[in-house]
Image (cartoon, rainbow over all chains, first blue to last red):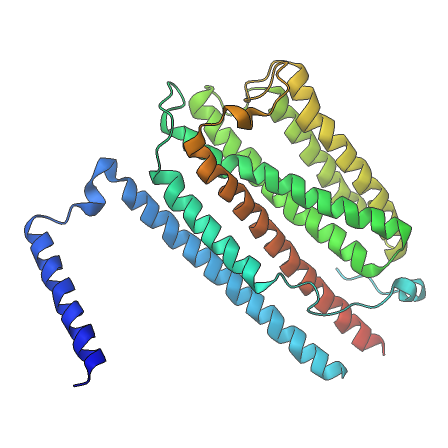
Length: 73
Length: 243
């Protein structure tokens, strides 16, 4: 095992054990303060979806532009 | 429906594909700014005011729609002026697609405003001078597309709609920015107030509001450029068919 995988495994273990401890105390991060974080999460999902769609559309147009330029030239 | 190109439309000049794509770093900036707007806009501290309550956060989403609309209409008008000075099909396409995207943002602005007004002013349509002015200018811009749809000859359509577009922009300025300030309006910065309500804006809110405005404007420009590129491809295909 090289150093890098060891480091990743170590921090992964630390992260997971922290997560397990947090669950023992109830995972209430998303439930606090009137559940506003849930709304943030929903809006972010929609935003990521829409932007992802826009980026895909953009790339599709670029592809067609390229195809058309090649056809012309 | 696609109208056949007349021989007169050939004088319109060349279209350069891919010259109108928004720069990559601007696209990335748009995404970062808007992601920040959503998170900070909902989580950061805002002033605690009666009646408005948490809806004050709508400022980060409703108002930038109008900023975006005005910027896109302004770009559209500049292309129209350029068209009249030196006609080319590219300027006509740019002009119409920026107006198109601007209209989209304007409609989103009016609908979000109606929802907001319903819960803070008591009804969706209050006859507020700014609300009416915005609705009238949207109708003026809708008429722009009606005008375009009703002229067959491409060159005539481009010229007439360029003239009308300049008029529409000139009509929008008093309708949205001047008249509401001369009468009493429930929008901030109105009613005899010279209007830069930004100076009253809480400094915490400014940290979200300005990035939000920039982000939404950039998103509008991104969509407009995408529409322009699609139109350009369409025109190129017609060119190929005619050859």
